[in-house]
Length: 512
Ligand SMILES: *[C@@H]1O[C@H](CO)[C@@H](O)[C@H](O)[C@H]1NC(C)=O
Ligand SMILES: *[C@@H]1O[C@H](CO)[C@@H](O)[C@H](O)[C@H]1NC(C)=O
Ligand SMILES: *[C@@H]1O[C@H](CO)[C@@H](O)[C@H](O)[C@H]1NC(C)=O
Ligand SMILES: *[C@@H]1O[C@H](CO)[C@@H](O)[C@H](O)[C@H]1NC(C)=O
Ligand SMILES: *[C@@H]1O[C@H](CO)[C@@H](O)[C@H](O)[C@H]1NC(C)=O
Ligand SMILES: *[C@@H]1O[C@H](CO)[C@@H](O)[C@H](O)[C@H]1NC(C)=O
Ligand SMILES: *[C@@H]1O[C@H](CO)[C@@H](O)[C@H](O)[C@H]1NC(C)=O
Image (tube, rainbow, N blue to C red; front, side, top):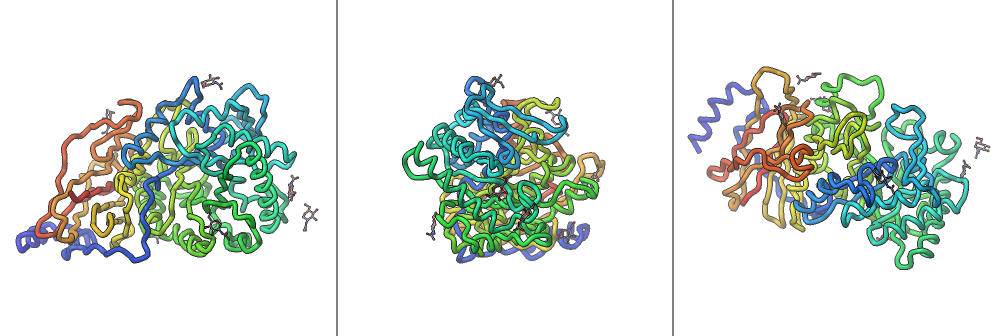
């Protein structure tokens, strides 16, 4: 003990305050009301227009996407759930006689998303290329031309997707419908009535074509509620008091979440990365209203999910959301959300999106690529593993740029995740600083291994690994490849774990 402290004192003199704790940090016991975290916490949302690009079709399945999804099953025992939807869902029309699987009509060729999506029966081949995934399928609530359109789209979905259809979704982000899809005076009550009416149409059509229990909906898929509140009176709590979903067809509550919006004026991307994403305080502040909303709506008896989320809205931002720092944000965000009873996190994907976890096909000159956020998802999945009783508790630390979580199985501390969120540019010539932590462990935790989430810097686009493993396309098309086989044992002496975390990296400690 004496030796350890005196050795530390020597280095501590050169460290800034807050970097080194002389007293080992104690690990909080589990809060009484904490619930086990689902193994499929990490989930995906794929933009409706780009689902065929991600999944391929029967003759040309996208095996890269399938591999990246299968990796989760290896780690957690379950495949991630996939929601197919987004803004393009409310611009999509089903044409039973269309030969092409999908026709995308762009207003400007450089736009992130098409303005109109016409899909035919061939579109549904994409639901049968990724293995045994459970899907949440988006229906267009915007189109008002005919009830038959909605009926035939819903019927085709249930007959084609079959037992892999987990839930439907009717409309995307309708809290922004006034002035966008409907007249400016379209009210929350108007929305409630229109959704109830159309949900009943969907249910009747599906029950006719696909006998058996109706799958139900994820709803209401509102976004940026707290940013928009100053301008509207649309709240989720108010919605359910207006008779929304009077027939209780909803099975899961879904809200969308972003840390900010990619719209000017914005500070430089590298600066915003530190301030907005690599910032535990800011992440917790961003999620607080969702956590409160989950409590307010608990009486409904539905699981609370983020049915679409990612870092910065409007498809992300180069230099901020496509770099390694975003992966560190994703890890911190996921653990915090899971601790606060958010059941699933559907990270949103689209072709060439600047926050995507992978690029599924060559597009705009960019070949298939596994991108940094994917590695964050792998770290979170690894922390949960196959265990059915993982519970997470945050370990409070003093700085915005650090974060730690204890993961318990039952009452046993099984893992510890530690993140150093200080930005480190790979281009700088100075040596990479690190932070040293001491954690006071329970008696049984004497032996542990360390897996690190690392990259050359917070601004890195490639060379990311977790536990020395790369999932790069160039190696084995997304299959795990060990690129650094050196195993790291944790330094535990007299019940105290000592660990160094370089700036812009994270570590997962697993007690053996
Ligand atoms: C399947 O995908 C390939 C490659 O994108 C495409 O050429 C083909 O037309 C698609 N087939 C159908 C039936 O959509
Ligand atoms: C669609 O229907 C809703 C509810 O009946 C109505 O409020 C809205 O104005 C209609 N929109 C269009 C474009 O017809
Ligand atoms: C809403 O605005 C439309 C015109 O866009 C008008 O015809 C309608 O009467 C208005 N409804 C209400 C309830 O004010
Ligand atoms: C990293 O580099 C970017 C631009 O390349 C810059 O905006 C940012 O301030 C740098 N961050 C640090 C921590 O040096
Ligand atoms: C982190 O976010 C909080 C809350 O938004 C803010 O007050 C703080 O300045 C941020 N810290 C850094 C290092 O940018
Ligand atoms: C609605 O259904 C959910 C299950 O999906 C159930 O937990 C809840 O109690 C039901 N609510 C009512 C009012 O029946
Ligand atoms: C990244 O990996 C590539 C090989 O995939 C290698 O050529 C390059 O030097 C690496 N870059 C860094 C910064 O480590």
